[in-house]
Length: 393
Ligand code: PLP
Image (cartoon, rainbow, N blue to C red):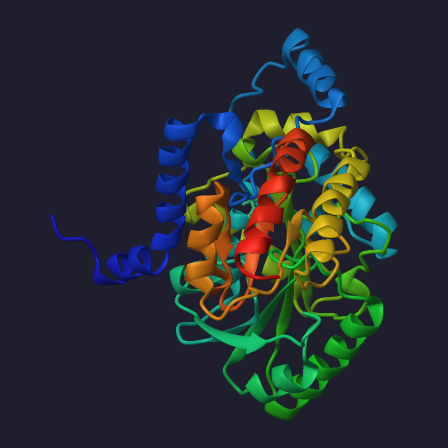
């Protein structure tokens, strides 16, 4: 049965995901779960906060007639109002339920936003290193991804972004705290980006939207994660509770439009329509009810900071080089030898599974997802030592 050439091509280009998965399964079968150090997936092992089970019990004990029916494609008014209240407070902007659409995670929110914005052939800037799905999502919605390098510290390079903008540029996706680097973009950077986009909009007579992908916004180790709405008028937040409530399998997130955006009402109508016709129809009813009263609740960020410190301190001591992450749950060190894939293979000898930087458009680096048990990180430390010794660090 022939499949589309584009899909065949995409599968080949993301084959490392399948390879890592198969490698992990085979090592686990050989050595047992305890002895395989799988740092490949951003799939938190942390359980959701206790309040989540309490909310779940309340919902089960007080079923509302019709609670499993279809609803307005944007989602429940009550849920959107709860989401809007917290964003309005953080951003100090008049965000209301009308600016929110509940979605099946940030992935769906990104697809909905891109479908709403893009005419065929419109360009979307993404910053290297990037979350690998961006390319596929942009392609899904008939756009063209334009990859722009970040600076040595993984902060946006505004000059490089400026050079990449042309009359076809419709949007830029930013992601802070970042997957895979963990860096947070400061307010001054967002302000400078806002000024640049403004200038380019005037130059080309176009609208360029900043899409801020923020599933890690509540996992910050101290630095404030500034609100994009205060820096870029034409801006949208897309996010989810996959990471901050540790609910990736339950597919619940949302998009929020800046009330100051041009034609915001029309944009919202577009997103509600796209949520419907992309086949999501609406975000899961039960999950919307569940997260309504959890908008001020998050996983324990101190636990992630502890995991970061365990690994970061050890790897720096061993001679690895990397930018210290300010949030999220990833490290993105430099590969210390010339051949990236050779390094990944040597790490596998020590049963340490890592993702090569080329998976994020950044060869020469590797990603560690440290959203795993502390005990696993601790058990892995002597093996990191052996690995460092073998490669001559
Ligand atoms: N954006 C980034 C940067 C991510 O890391 C992820 C998931 O890992 C997503 C979006 C998608 O998240 P969701 O599970 O909410 O679809």
